[in-house]
Length: 189
Image 1 (cartoon, rainbow, N blue to C red):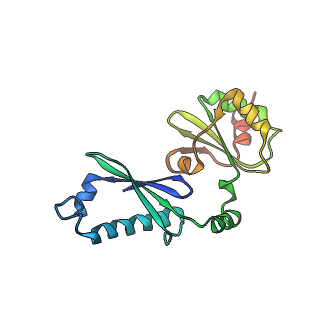
Image 2 (cartoon, one colour):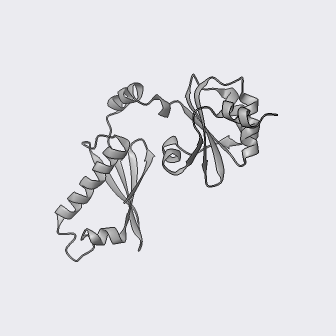
Image 3 (tube, rainbow, N blue to C red):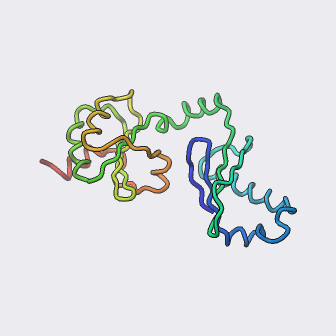
């Protein structure tokens, strides 16, 4: 069973057919045996709580995203209390609300971009990821929305449609927190 966070309250589960067979969910009476389904959903909610720290004692909507001969994909939407979520954001994870991500097709563009913004950025953490031969620069904890960074990034790359959660799960972290200093140290003019 694999899980992937799509948004702050949507999680996609991919469950292999072999795993469903092992749990007895593809036998003739699986629709009649609600205990099997109950155990599966309890396991899924436990994984959500373990991996993402989301309280699973909330209303859950389940949608079958796809079903083929290899796997079934389910999307769980958790009905999270908005005020509680806002309080959690302010007290625990500011990096997820103040995050900008830009994509670059080659490493030379990353180096050029970092040289250009070296003295123009007001950010506590700048990291570099790679995923599927694309480089992603992640600006976390920006003081405020920095339009200079975005304008310069558009010269060398583009704004990414990737989330930090997805990069953390599937991308490879190349440089953590101090991208500009690290690149300057290794790639001087």
